[in-house]
Length: 94
Image (tube, rainbow, N blue to C red; front, side, top):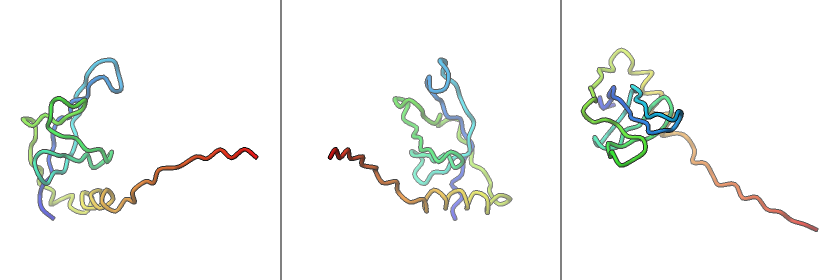
């Protein structure tokens, strides 16, 4: 597993509260544009036009040697999760 783990700040615009706020998260990336929040399984980008985005200047690489099993589990949980199927509701009136 490559060491593509970062600690960085994600900026949220008016999602939980009426005010914008920042949150420090552990993120995983393979291309330095898309970042995955391993705990909440949410993807972010560095594109500032999005509602929630990663502040690229705050990203710091993390040495995961001590937590390799934990981070590996979180990453595998994301990739092994089955895709949710859309539920179709039918209303049959007889």
